[in-house]
Structure formats: structure tokens, C-alpha cells
Length: 217
Image (cartoon, rainbow, N blue to C red; front, side):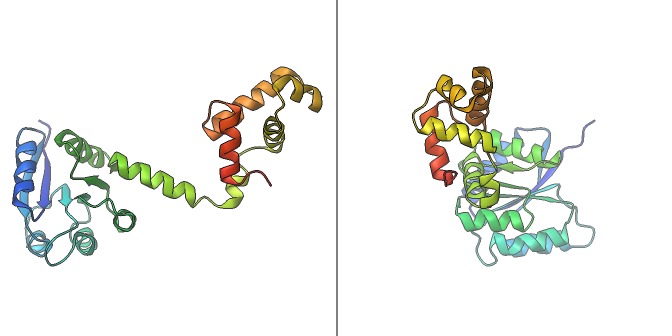
């Protein structure tokens, strides 16, 4: 028999606790072990001698008294094997980055469906991480913005940059092949690689992205 995943819920809204209760009650593979309205009481419970440690802690950020972010490190210290998933309304950039830096295994928004929350619990229990789609998109954008300039400049090879520059001058593939004294299929392959690396489908889009990344000197 497969053992149920045990969950502790730390959430000050009684209405939202009831939503989670109902969602998990309908799933035989996940068991709501305990629920608390404040981080202080939850920590006191988890630190009690012989207290069962939950597999997953669903932790709100906006709590009365100690905030979820402040409590996160204490949960990680008191129950190092428990996975912490932030479950909050906040999609604030600083909250997301700090929670992940402090060791949260996941970050979900309360707009998530019951299915998404349960799937997130299973994902972190299998060793993965779970992120709300909106949060994941934000992180991707943030990381791309922080990409070192040297890495940006090395996205395309010198030959690819040469061909992209000629595309920017209005030349077509046949003209580029003649100008560089290389075969048309070779130019076509380089152009395909350029589009793939820049995640575009045509020359105008490639040139636009290259300008935004500062590839043209």
C-alpha cells in the first residue's frame, strides 16, 4: 500500500483553509495532517517532542505575527526533510526570489486550482520544484535580463552574426551566399540556427531581437 503524502497547512484565512481541506479530502494519496493560522503555533507544534513531521508544508506569506518568509528558515531548520511550498496571493518579485533563496521547494499562487496544488505537492515529493506559471514566466524574464553581456554576445557565432547583419542590410539568402562565397544550403542552415537560437521565425524578428539584446555593435 502506497503511503499518503502528509501535509501541514499554515494559513490565516479560515475560508481558504476550508478550500484546501476539501481539495485534499477528495484525494486519497494526500493527507492533511494539521493546519494552523499562524507560523508561531505551527512551529511550536512541529518542534514538540515526538511530533510527526509533515512531508510538505503549505505556507502562506501574509500571516499575523511572523510572516511566512521569516518563518521559512525556521521550518527548514526544525523539519529539514519537509518540503515547503509557498501558497500565497503575492506575486511580488522580491517575495518570489527571497522564498526560493531561503529554500522553498515551490511557489504557487492562491489562484491555482486544486488540481495544480495537488500536482505541485506530488512534484516536490518526487524531488522536483513547482512554480505557478505566472511566477515561472517572471523568473525566466528576470534571469534573461540578468544574463551577463559576454554570454549574450556569444549567443551567435561570428559567421551567424555576419549573416544576420547582411539580412539586416536587406540581402536575401542567395545574395548572402554569393557575397560570402559559400553555398546556398550553408547559408540556409546558418539562418535556421539563428532563428532557433533567437526563438523567432523570420528575418525581421531576428533582427529586432538582436537589436534588443545589443548584439549589433
